Image (cartoon, rainbow, N blue to C red; front, side):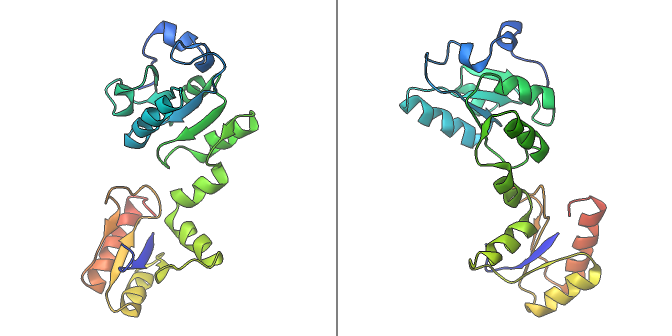
Length: 206
């Protein structure tokens, strides 16, 4: 868990025939055009597809369901779970590059794809800093970038000390897994800050 000063504000394929095709063989992809496999099916992946069309391309998508946002606009869709290695491997088969539309893809999967010769962009070493907010703050600070006051919260005393340090202007965040406001709190008192920290540790959202 990290506290900051508040000024910083399914595994089955769509069909048996689709499962048998690599990205390069799918009719959605023109001959000789590099294929980009995208892990994730949200709004960013959907926007990638519309931009790919402008370049004469079409992405291959690993989606959780046929009606997911990006799956609605892509022809080459593999239905699966990005937490399952076999699904990820199946989705990238034949692609020249691999990317993702969120930071929750297991880093070990992306490292394995890199070892297999795939061009994974951004690289897994960069993704780490999007996955862990504390490591991100530390890395930005090392690079000399401006960051708000922050502290790793590993105990109730840490929470109370930081609350006092910034005069109560605290934004408490889970280090991993938070998104779209989830895993983010603005405690009004040191006691609430400590209680939220304890609750988050119980849910393993450090």
